Length: 254
Length: 284
Ligand code: SF4
Ligand code: SF4
Ligand code: SF4
Ligand code: SF4
Image (tube, rainbow over all chains, first blue to last red; front, side, top):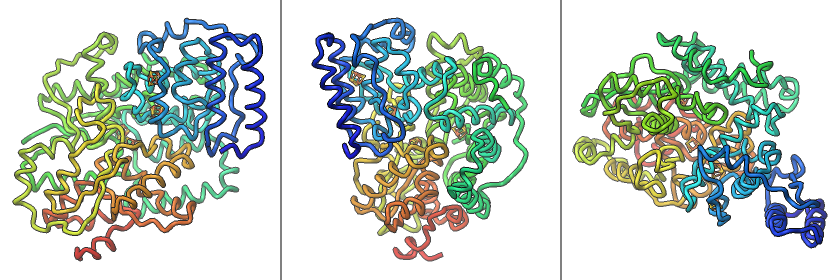
């Protein structure tokens, strides 16, 4: 907690920001959120500087287009910032924005912030927030919506391993003809991550191989051809309709 | 009873031990599990994370297969169960038409634990117990997806489910109360961010131990894998010597009902449960 001296600098900076004459009401609101963000403890917040909303120095320009696009899913405008979602979220230690902040920023139309944040990728979809929100906002659903929109926008993921894992998973189901093949998934994921050399150095690959061996000798990892379904054409049609491969990550398609 | 059975992909792969224990206990109960023909992957976390259409269409096809088979369908995987329920709601809502799958309804989607802990089954089970699990102090771990969100899963007790505890009592074990039975273990991030798993799962070990438990009991192969496989790594990382076997509830049913294959099922675990079982007088 607050071990990093940079946090203090940021807080000092934020305080100055919130006192500045340009700080309008909305501006202050967001600034307070960011402040609470810096005060939280977390083990991997050092990975990347915490993103600071652009509103720190300029008044915020709210836009409701994002909230309108989300309206088919859930009503983010019903949020009254009680923060119950964040209070019960088990993953806050790995997030750059708390779930309530994602909802607030989405409501205020801060698209670049919410599409580029780490939170949406480290959210484990545990549905605690959605279950407990007093206003029935589907927060976990918003996280999913934002992930899909982030990929569609073509921007680089702040959590490339997580993004590649999801993509590799769906590729595997498609390539295997409708069911997941775990060995194929792990192979594809490793291939996509490419960092085999780095992993070798860090010993992570050795650990992975050891685990694979532990499973294999318990007959839990049996290499065999994937089971192609009779309905493989139906599965293909679903993938076609999903437009999964028409987005900017197409070049990553194996 | 004859019901449809949707095993899900991992029960054909790394969770074949879970599949074996399910087959084993159903033979001891009045239960015929008929595998759905030509079922497909439900898309899991990947689909709902990055492709909304697939996240509904993939499980919707399985539901249509189940409806065509005309029987309720039981599901041993928490995530598969959750995705089938999401698809069920979607097919009945405004998005249904867009999925290109017709689903007449008329069947119920069950998670396996719920199915086997219906009053009638529990009543039947008591007299069949030949080796009560006396002395086994256990916490039930449900994880997230079987219960949440209740608007999807139709569960009334999503904050504090009791099925595992009720079952464990019938089996003669000692279920302990704890507040983390539905806390997330983060399995979906196990490959991409193992460091996150370490934090979440270590917290669960600590809380289970603080509750006085000798083991955890789960009803989902992802929870099992995620609590069992990294236990050594987490012990090393946190300078502890954790020993908490992670049982499938079906394995404990097999044990109490005297199924001959239990030892074989348990051999699939990374954390060997035999020393614990021997300690409470269960030699093989
Ligand atoms: S729980 Fe709901 S209302 Fe409260 S802050 Fe979170 S999203 Fe907003
Ligand atoms: S679904 Fe995501 S945001 Fe919501 S509580 Fe779980 S981890 Fe947190
Ligand atoms: S959730 Fe897992 S086990 Fe279930 S169908 Fe999907 S991939 Fe297979
Ligand atoms: S495996 Fe873990 S993350 Fe997945 S549903 Fe079970 S508890 Fe939740």
